[in-house]
Image 1 (cartoon, rainbow, N blue to C red):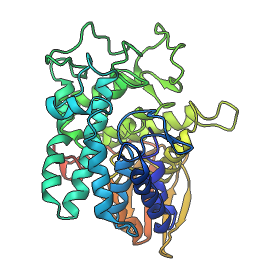
Image 2 (cartoon, rainbow, N blue to C red):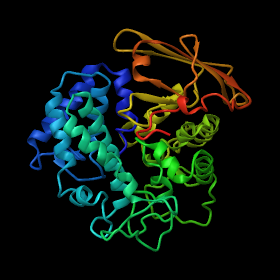
Image 3 (tube, rainbow, N blue to C red):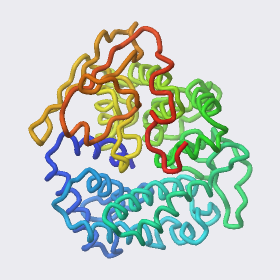
Length: 399
């Protein structure tokens, strides 16, 4: 469930391209051996367990291709991705294709499945477009917007819908395992999972100020009267932000999409200070094959891949004074944080290769070219840096 979010994007930076190409070739080879004719969902010892949701081998392949990694048959890979996304018996996909969402009265965890499918579909569209396969791109660009079909604009929540179009009631956004409308989480965590179109989501929520208020409400939520003890996947709570499970992992970075990057910086400090330490409890949840650690590595460097497949990393704030990445191409990319301390917890200014960086993201290509990303840390938030529409990261439908 987690590796496509940060683990694989990290490997595209620090491992030789041949390593990622090997992963992609293995995924495609697995599809060719699969009795179902699809990419692995969650294999164990060569057998499909069907554990977790989505078809998240898809964004791993698309992200690699879009970053220029070759050494695999792209046409075969795209065919495998499409096969996985159109395998009707799996996880309500037949209904998803015909209704535009997964219906809860026919498939459990329907709300989560709808938004995770839509993200995966967007990555298929991106790769197909880059390959000139415009028929595939058109189909999956349409499907990438299906997240809207499970979003209740009236209440501002991602909700489970029934086949007749009605939203399931009663509805409680704090309920976990509430008839399993969501996977290992609730409406608070899953309503933010539209990495491909955060701008579209924010418009539905009523704009930037309303979005920032809702993000703050999530982190500041008083959970003292809620009992999540029976939910084994719920760990690392900061209000309704659950760091111990991946659907929350991009949420602190979303302030930067809403014109308030200094709020991202403050939340990241809160998360790093409370969720990581050198004791037996120093990692919330489990490492999930490297995702919890990959989140910390990216965050410590000062940026994070909110939407793998976009080619962008959203800038947060660094947690190391200096780090140098030796890139597979022989170049080096260095991050420097001047004046970082507990008091200086905000980003005052950012430069890339000595020039002021006014946007709140860097691209994969910029990292690959080598150079230096330098942060000037500050005790007070800079409320003008990175706030313009032009400075914001990618969103499918703009802002």
